[in-house]
Image (cartoon, rainbow, N blue to C red; front, side, top):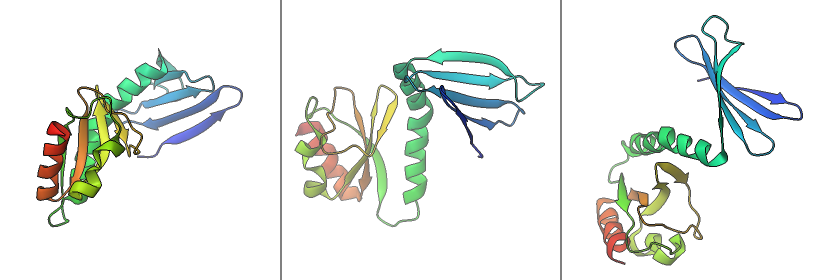
Length: 157
C-alpha cells in the first residue's frame, strides 16, 4: 500500500492512501498533538468529503482497534515457517502495577513479550520499564514450553 506523506507547513503532516473504492483515507497529524481522520470525495480524491477530529487518546484507541488484531496476525504469519516458534496472547494477572522487567520473563522462560494489548490498543516492543495494568494481554513469542512457562508466570507470578 502506497502511503503519501505531505508536509503541511505550520500545521503538521497529512498521511493518506487510496482505498479500493477510489477514495483516499488519511490522517492529519497536527503539531499540537491533535489528529484528524479524513476521507476524500468519491468524485474527487483530492477533495475532503468528511473529517473527524480525534484527541490523542481517541486516535490511539482507533489505532489499537485497527492494529492489535493485525499485529497478532502478522506475528503469527512471520513465525509460521519457523519450526518450534509460536505466538500466543496471554493475560497478565500477576503483574498488574509492576514493570515488564520485574517479570524476568525472557530470562526465566526464553520467551519474549513483543507487544501488550491494553483496551484494544497495541503497545509494540515494550521496554523493561513498561507497567502492566489489569486486563492487559501480553503477545508472547517462543517455544511451546516457553509459552507455557510464561503463562504460569504472568498468571501466578
